[in-house]
Image 1 (cartoon, each protein chain N blue to C red):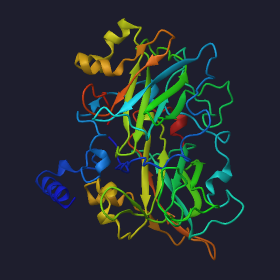
Image 2 (cartoon, chains in turn purple, blue; image 1 turned 120 degrees about the horizontal axis):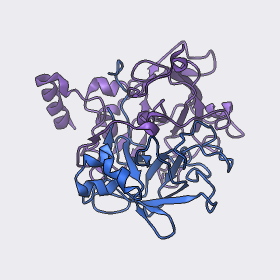
Image 3 (tube, chains in turn green, purple; image 1 turned 90 degrees about the vertical axis):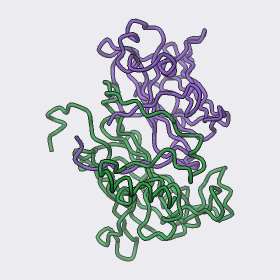
Image 4 (spheres, helix red, strand yellow; image 1 turned 180 degrees about the horizontal axis):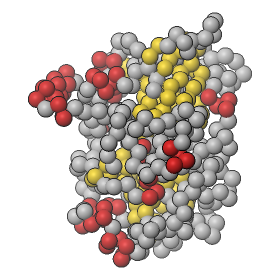
Length: 245
Length: 183
């Protein structure tokens, strides 16, 4: 990883337009990427009608209580209770309103509820680790959960993923559809994780790290984190009422 | 041009099983109902091996070319056509959507927009699947015309005898599917 990152830094120093903002899809230190990335350049094309719209979601799809991952079973899940909140904006800074946000994560011991997760850490009977919500009129999302633990994986000897929460997001255009991961500040595993490090630029990597926010923290209840998400730019011609703030 | 820098994408990972799939997610209409049509295929890697942990989403107009803005994709009522669906591949890398043939919008060649997520794939990929029938509209399509014949073929499904569309996705290697960039 060090060699790839040094080569990137040199290329960027020689030509600032070489700055990368997305992960590389062919990042050899992440073994599973080797056979699963296209080898040909993505074909630049103008989005057409259907791609200029996104699916619609409403409270018929998502109940308000689905944003609380700590109340889905009979008891309290184990771990540090946290609140995560932030804004979802498009590339022009417009809030993404009433769109679906899906989150999933490991429990406090670093174990997922999944048949392929064989990590011998305890399953928490009071935690499935899945939540859904809609953004509000200002593009805000907010959910309550417990802090996920790091967990081992088979990429290389002694490989551990930093604690993270997966996010699935929609914009106003289908071209903005994305899935990403939110990380926690100061994690010592960052430097060793090929998935996080597949983003070669430090500034871009930092965009995936939440901020501890004492204003979100609740007295005698939960610690708070803030993470804003920017989707790519919208290609749509906006109607006046959609622009209306 | 965008004023803000977008947040980077990341792999969907292997453990989305309880988060993203949901009942009837791949059934935009009821299977076997008169208007229903099956789109199916296999997702393969650079060795030609099927990928067991891939998730696909489609987004399309209805048979009249109307883009739905109706809610209810996550809670299918069996009547509302929302135009959006999600399918996880099975252990053999195979997926099936039950939907309708998309209608033409503005007299253009009809297609279904597709997004691909997978373990090992560090960012989402966009592509399209076109219907094979309207050869005149296909011949005029800007994207298809920009591609050499062998690559163009990766975006056009085959119509099977029962009316299904067969369309395979190859992430890498021979007949690699054309993936799109809109930026």
